[in-house]
Length: 261
Image (cartoon, rainbow, N blue to C red; front, top):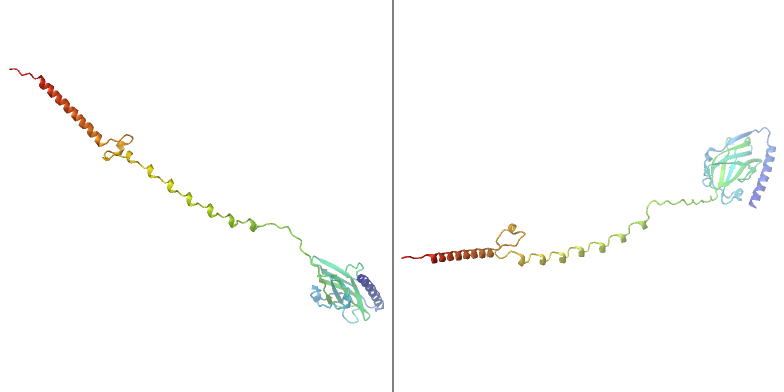
């Protein structure tokens, strides 16, 4: 319904524009007027807001409304066409008024016998870059009068593939992996008294040298020890045998002596 209302309004405005141009003085030649330099680079949200303009009644929520006006006296004439350049965020977009394709709703509006008002609806968030107008007369510029900003649709960013860059906290060494006291060297691992050299492993008195303690250890190594008592007994026995033998010989010699008279 709103679209049909815009079409009817545009048709009425076109008829009115044609009638005004037909009544215009033939002496007026067409010329080109640039957009006011101060209005270049404007956004609808940052410009003067007048959303109570009845021409913006059909403005959709996702659209910006733009109102352009041709100033001047009798020499400026009327709008014949307007070419506008917008930036939609990704590149320039050209919008022409009037536009038969109705890609961007627009229409002229006449006042006082002159077509000096132009309305354009664009997607919300666009930036006005530049513009020129063809007019039936002479003017040094045309102006952006006021706007009504719509709500630009928000675009959620597409999820990008996640690339793991660092190990997650779950892969870090937890305190439970640390060496517990049960894994440390317990006192039971040390040399216990039972593993030390017991007194039973020492040299017993029966294997040690006798009480006389005589003799050199190096001379006795590898053999039985020679004690002082055994040596003395042998020597005494030998002396006894020698003495006995000597006495026996003396006795025999005495028995063999014969006395003569």
